[in-house]
Image (cartoon, rainbow, N blue to C red; front, side, top):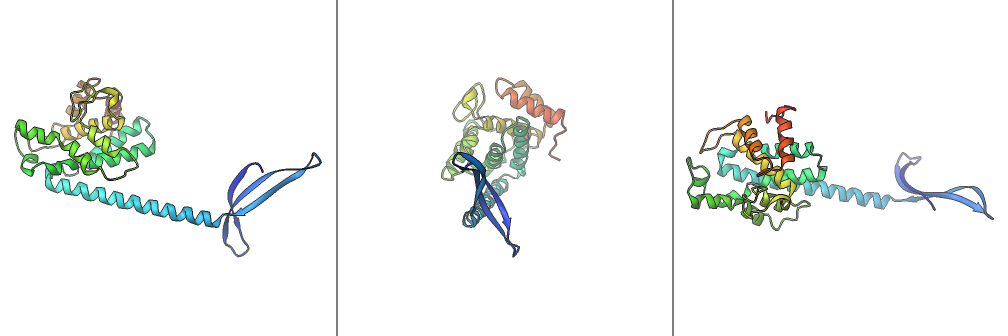
Length: 250
C-alpha cells in the first residue's frame, strides 16, 4: 500500500468514525487495473489520544496553578515587588517573540520568569524591604536567590529548562554576574532574555531603597551594557518593543 491518510466517515446513524485509509495502485499480470483502498477503524486509538490530550491539559492547569501560588507567596513577603514577576514574564515573552523563538521555548521562558524570584523565600523579609544600602552580608544573601530557586525547583520535571534559566538570569556576558560567573554563549538565550527583562522592570518601578527611575532610564541602562553585560540582540529587541512598537505594561 502507498499513502496513508486519516479522516472521519459519517455513518448512517450520524456517528463519526475515525478511520485510517491506505491506498495504492492495483495490477494484474503487470497491467494497471485501478486503485484499491483499505479503511481501518481507529476509534480506540482516537479515544486514547483524546484521553491523553485531556490529561496533558489538566497537568498544564495544575502546573500553572502551582506556579501562581508560588508567585503569590513571594509577593506576600515582598509587597514592593507585587506583580513584578508577571510584568517581567510579559516583557520577556514579548522579547522572545520579537527574536522569533518557537512557541514552546517562549512558554518555558514564561514559566521561568514567573518563578525567577522564588528563591527570595530564603531572604529575611526585613532585608527585602530594607530602605537604603545593603551590607555585604545582606547582599550575598540576595545574590544566593537564583541558586536557592534552582534547588527549590530541582525535583520538578518541567518540560523546559526552567531551573537553568532561573539559575542563570543574573549572569552577565562578561562574567561579572552571579552565581556562577558564566560568560557569553555559556548563558542560555532564555536566561539572557530574562535578565534584560528583569533589569528593565526593576528600574522602571519603585523599590524600597529607591524611587522608580522610569522606563527610559532603564532602556538607557541596557544600552550602556549592550555587548558587555547584556546580549546585543536581546537589547535591540527590547528597545524596538518600547521605542518603535509602543510596548507598555499598562
